[in-house]
Length: 465
Length: 106
Image 1: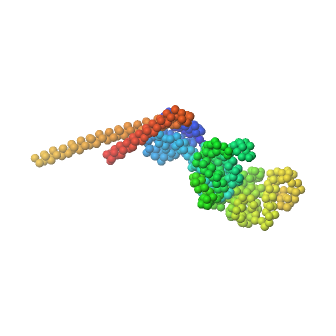
Image 2 (image 1 turned 135 degrees about the vertical axis):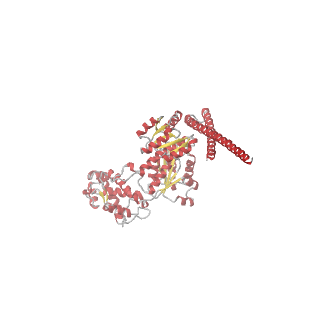
Image 3 (image 1 turned 120 degrees about the horizontal axis):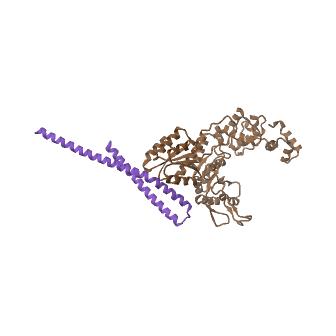
């Protein structure tokens, strides 16, 4: 997480006080240094993310020189006088992060500081070198997003730039590419909203009436079954971010209502005349060609333009294979922890097999395959044997099967039904520490049935790690 | 006779040049001091204006919409905007002075 300590290096008392008050209101930890000596001693602590100074003060250039000479990580923002613009430009050449000409709007100061702090995150990301260890630490991800491919770095860069704005974001990408993760990362990158709720809502999962009441809330008695007043998702997400998944499946009349929320940030609960105003960052996602839906009049054109302020396309897994090792480390770490296993790594052959797969289910498919492999693994290293036969044989799933859970190409329904049963039994056995009595109870079958199933699927006790 | 006439004309030319040179120096001194005064004025004024503007913004955050004090502060902000405009014009003037000074000294 970026630091939020700021040093105001300025001898003018009025400037000091006004900046101090402003920055404290924005939750920064602020220190003031009036003299050169105070500045020097404060700088030696090297705990500041941003130093705000005046170029007309002698210490302005001194600070920039000291920061660059001592290779301090602090960013220097110069407050320049109207008449000293040239000096300010020179200060940028010397290494200042930004310069602002007085009188400067508060918004510009805060934006500049936020940019400086955001640049810490970017620098941290770029300086990240994968270590030999297999399990990735949480800090190695960008707010939960994994990958160092150019496509992902471009996404991080866009997220950084739009994080503190109010712009609506449209996330596009195939199913399983991680649209929800990107939305969550955007929420976390927004310094103002990250402490507020992140609310998700799938527009395709529920009937139209329920979606309306879910999104906007309802009053008591608004419809049959509305026994009490209920807050909608928009109201719950006030101050934070709302993700509307599968936006393409939203009913036409709700599209109109959403348009109003986007334009005026206001709506009414179902069965209520009072207008509610909210401050919510709206993120929508789709895996459809939304332009085509607009052309076919299945999606409102005006809503499309409102939503398409910032559009981010998330690449499918087969377009970012360079991220595969990082993703493998990430999921292996998660599932080995969950299943109390010690996975040392993955063999080169298994990695090559995974690279040859087409991944129609994208990262979700990979995640499920890794979970399966971790559960099935016996020797602490994921090998080709731990991967589903379909992937071992280089057979890809049929198009449209994107959940990644049914992996094999089976000749009969019976065979197809057996695979998930086997995986589930293995998972429960692993959870119960291979205690068959507990596992049978958890599975809701007799111990004898469990033994029979284990024999049928060739599951032996020595499969445990 | 002719020789003495030539000498007289030459001395007149030199005197003219000297007078012109003195005028130029006076102009340069005037421009330089005006430039200095303007730049100093800008430096002295923009910091307090910047701070006053920020304090007003902070005060506005604490006041209710439509209150009279809020209205007064908004009017004050208008005054600050006007002053800023004047300062920027002064800056333009100081720059022009600087350019003229450069032309003369070059």
